[in-house]
Length: 259
Image (tube, rainbow, N blue to C red; front, side, top):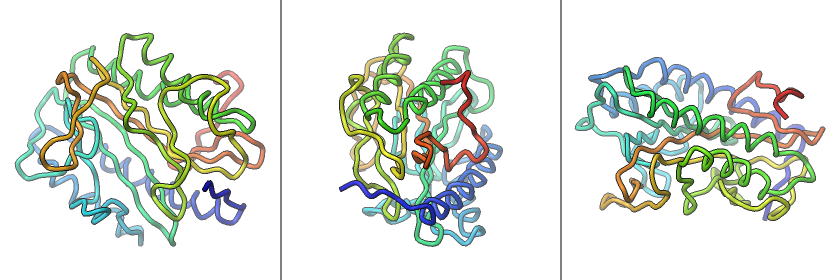
């Protein structure tokens, strides 16, 4: 069941998203060669609790950390560890969620650690831009397939793989709600978008093939061919005007030039 949010509920989610944006800005600034992913996790939890919020990932279905840190060929759900030391040239995705006053927000970004190759940077840039290509279709009356098709078409034009087994999702009082939000699809197909819907859109784009596998830890997802992966995510709503608003990127405005 899809839960449409009223104006008061959307305002609560807007506040949650703004706090998460602040957390991720600080995490992005902290990333450097030589640090462990566990250090980043400790810092994330400190920032979240400083905002009088709760880390939504911690203990979620048994997940042992406040953030997911996925390095290079890891797609998502990488577990922070003292044994994973970031190196110059690595590609790191950080996925984080928090709960403020009972309302969830969820967001992810990918960055290079230190100096990275132009090929890796292009993958990161294309993944981020594919997200924005997708949400420009997140307009009331359109369908989920319009979002997924925009992400898929743009990413595949660079020869990249689009992960299909993992999707975005509805979000609200629960981290995962209906509907699923695939990063591929056919225009005009899928659930129709309506004002009051809140979803997390999160393209996962690989430099090689799209196929994935799960490691023995039961969490970490990797590319089957060992290719680098990039991940980008924000929590958005379809507002009362039928247009997308990014809660976890406050101040972003969809302009006519971007449509």
